[in-house]
Image 1 (cartoon, rainbow, N blue to C red):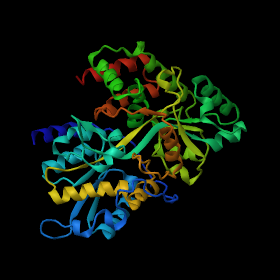
Image 2: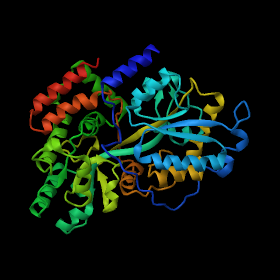
Image 3: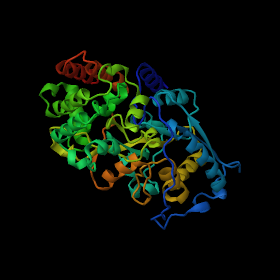
Image 4: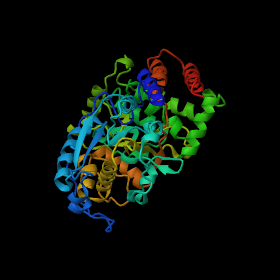
Length: 451
């Protein structure tokens, strides 16, 4: 309980890491895609995936499990799924939602000895609460790629990768092509010089400010600046070693090529920012509409942004062009599992734990579960046996990079206060209230305090 209290206090005092979220997230597109057969024929489908006979607790009553959803744009989909799942399996899934910092919310629930059976959490939460979580290493979905994006700690897999998402430059191809008169191909603008030339061409063609830049601390610090941690050899070891060098003071950012490359690209986005006259008053929803309506051509964000679909579907996501092309940063899209399911092993009964595991297997191996993830939630599947293609344009664009092996490792062990602390420094820089060397010094000070 002392650990829980410490976690709760720390998280309450800081803003949580926001992965795959904005100030407002609308429901994702759910246009049905053609159904695909389950590749693994050894797995049961339909009602056989979890039979009513298996869904009884020790007293003979139908099993009930509770589920915490932390993605607001998927709440309706989860509620509808729960109804269908009960009809199919006899298991009641009570869906709950919180918009609180996930770690803070869970700390309170565990302190009250009342956690959920299954919880959709952020990457750091798996580490913070692992002593309360079920070991999922023996589950069937591990062999189908679940350990690639699932979190392994001390040789044990503790999480189920639910949402695979990507961060990068979202583009409106219609808006670009209207001015250039040419079909837009992201690969034609993979260098910073090519990209800058396109921005100038758009500006000369009447789109004076073809870029939207978010002011939100989570977007600036954890997503944009987070690329500095991601693009370190395209591996967990590379990212961890780089962050450790920041903590020790060994790395000086002003002497670091990756930092300067990233900030050169940031300066270019600032130059063409539609919010440039007052960048710190930028509104997330307005930026969304600017791109959707073609007032801008590019918006640095993630594959979760979906309001755009109301206006155009000729959109996609691409890597941010940079000067330094080490590790193929201009051709590989930062992507990873932004939300993970975990199962409580402290307070959930054995029957509830098994029911939760059955639910995860249902998602991977039952056609209805696959349909829920891919068609209804527009989620890029993390499992090799799922052949369904996501239909939402941004997710489909990201999936093309992932399927082609053009994915860049997404470092997600960022501390919970990185968004607020590093974000505040980046907001100062965005607003013209600090210089690059001052930003570098503040970021270095932040990390050195994390030792």
